[in-house]
Figure 1 (cartoon, rainbow, N blue to C red):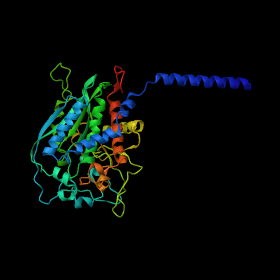
Figure 2 (cartoon, rainbow, N blue to C red):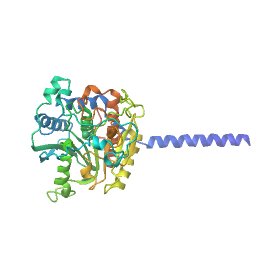
Figure 3 (cartoon, protein in one colour):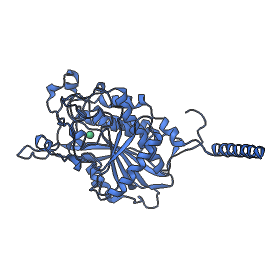
Figure 4 (cartoon, rainbow, N blue to C red):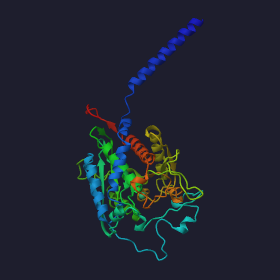
Length: 407
Ligand SMILES: [Zn+2]
């Protein structure tokens, strides 16, 4: 009796091991894990550093135009060679007589309901825009940022990974390349721009194939009220899914499946302390904040999409988790949110946290590369890992086996 029990136990264990070995052999390595592994902290940092050579990249200046040219050259060098530009005109609106404008100011700071409908709690720091050049102590940077903005023509660049089986459908992955505040716009939004550029690099590798298309867009004029993203949406929304020329298999504007914006990716040091100071280090609980807008036409679909990104974060992000919130606001996904499910990725929730002063460098002279530590840069890298994993899943990304050498 006892012997037969042992014998059948042995048989069970052996069968089980065999099953596991078969399962392991059948399971091919996850191509997305390989692709995510091609993102590196040092490369991400170097791309941000490259953007900061153009100072704050304020719209309507030579340094902004030089940055657009540089971004385009980088995209081409990554193999994302089909770059195109959106052209639009920007005219500064007349200031309202009461001096109120975007960004709230003192009156807005009184309300418990923050931007995007978020409920603000706890100690509230200030969140304002610096317009004083003398607050920039670095004289070289102050000089670099000194040319004022002039109204007129604006350009912004994008490139597209074309899907092999569904070139007529795409996800838009975006950040904004302009900045303000007399710093280097390293975090706002060099960190999001570099993320999008790094994803363009990985997806443009010759051994990567996707079923559906992905457009990598670097908006201009976000800081003037989302003008560049709005220009794109206005100019191109009616072109979606149309083959042109007919019968060519080419879709200049594939149908939008989702729009994912990345804006301020690095700084999550927690809430301001009671004495107004902030933690000098990234908090251990730092997270990537994925927001959709509850009041948008596609709120339910965007919420569902957000959870796909959260699950991709669990699978592919090395250090920091992702959290979801319903109050997406003040970024370039807004002009898209009633046209397609739209998300924004950030270091903190825009309304409840950044709106409460959680990022003291926001639009300030201190938003320079040297302000941030590797723990800060790594939060941006984790957002890149998250978006790469999710977009890879959603577009059916795979590695072709034609490349047998190299890595
Ligand atoms: Zn921004």
